Amino acid sequence: MVSLTFLDFSLAALGVFILHRFFSSKRRQSLPPGPKGLPLIGNVLDMPSSYEWLTFAKWGEQWGDIISVNLPGQHLIILNSAHDAVEMLEKKSNIYSDRPTLLMGGEIVGWNSTLALTRYGERFREYRRYLTRIMGTKSALQSYHNLIEEETSKFLRRLLQTPEHVHKHIRKTAGAIILMMAYGYAVEEDEDPYVNQVDKAVTEFTIVTTPGAFLVDVLPVLRYLPSWFPGAGFQRIASEWREDLRQMADIPYELVKQKMREGAALPSFTSRLLESEKLTREKEFNIKWSAASMYSGGADTTVSAIYSFFLAMTLNPEAQIKAQKEIDVVVGNDRLPTIADRDSLPYVDALLKEVLRYNPIGPLGLPHRVSDDDIYAGYLIPKGSLVFANIWAIAHNPKVYSNPSAFNPDRYLGSNPEPDPREFVFGFGRRICPGHELSSDCFFQSTHSEFQA
Ligand code: HEM
Image (cartoon, rainbow, N blue to C red; front, side, top):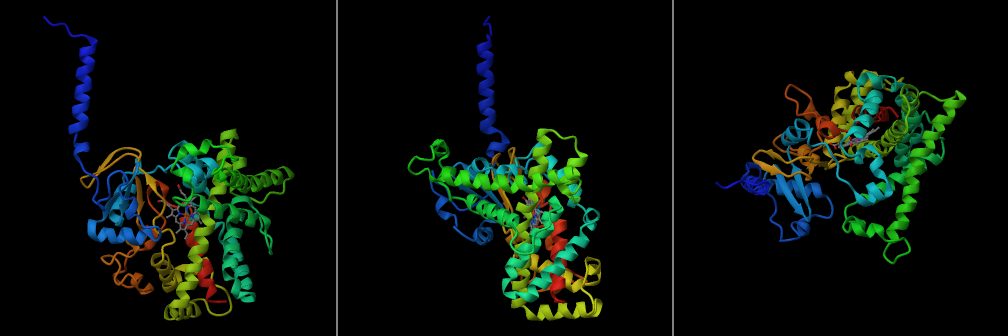
């Protein structure tokens, strides 16, 4: 009789494993369709260098709502419909909530300490818990309504004095609200050194996370070159920008601690957490960086949304006149509107929705990295793929929004309103924008008050 050895068992098991991998249902599934690409380099030559969301929407007309794009070592999955984004990013959020690792921006400069680039895990959950406590619900935000209304009045005064500096005034207002909430920090009326510091770091973030901006992202081994080595100029940029980022997070955080010691701290996100949490090094890190995530995530986005409003009003005077009339009737001329007036101003509210839909300010959101193989709609979504919800395509889907390229607030009114874009412009699932309720309040206040100025 033949005796079976451990080696025989091992070889048999290996054979079964290989056959299983080869024939398993997952491996037989194919990736979602998409442009064909070339051997080795995949779709590198098909990739647009700007306005990617428009190209992805066009590809959607040819290939369907779920597209795959293959780059060397990286699958991209593009979702052109809200239905698929909800089914995958929300309903299967346990495997669709990670973020990619960015070498230059994330690891070398250090932006992976902020929430937007934090990998899915315990630290992510703690940041989100902290942020939900301060701005995750309408009732939590109620205590900030006075702050938002006061800063809006200051904004209108600045705008009346120097309307040509509208962009600067919007920046200052968004910064003032977020810095007061995060640190109890009151910005200076003229140039504020801290606002300038954060703006500098956030601009550097935009550059450092632009795909293809730094060769080290493509050839990771370059990170070990010393800064004096020819071609290693990125190392000098990295150390300067790392310092800017460190100051952005450290300076206001240390200021709050100093004011707390003096008994002079205004209540803020940071001071409340420092008081209520049992502090360890890890907790302090998480408090400091979740506070820094508020400004770095909220400043540019809110500014773009309010700036878009001004553009929309310039291009669509008929909508502006209608909104003005509604405010004149409901609020009158002797006071500014407040957030409490919102429910009585349906046309203004619809106008706000239309600004967010017409020009979504994050047209591709942020990438969700898949942490396990998945089968969706019969397609294989391999572990490690980056999934992008094409928010622009969702907002301009002609099956959902009639004549989507027209600016038309009336589409949200009447007996058969079209869907509220706030359901998708803030992203999806566990990664949904933690500032969505806050931005809705800030945006509403600064835009409807503008009609009174
Ligand atoms: C109109 C204003 C805003 C829009 C349209 C917007 C949109 C978005 C979108 C699309 C995402 C990606 C979500 C995803 O991955 O699915 C995001 C993430 C984020 N937003 Fe916003 N946002 C706005 C304002 C704000 C504000 C005011 C704050 C903070 C005070 C903020 C903080 C963040 C942070 C920290 C993240 C990363 C979340 C994570 O990775 O878990 N945003 N936002």
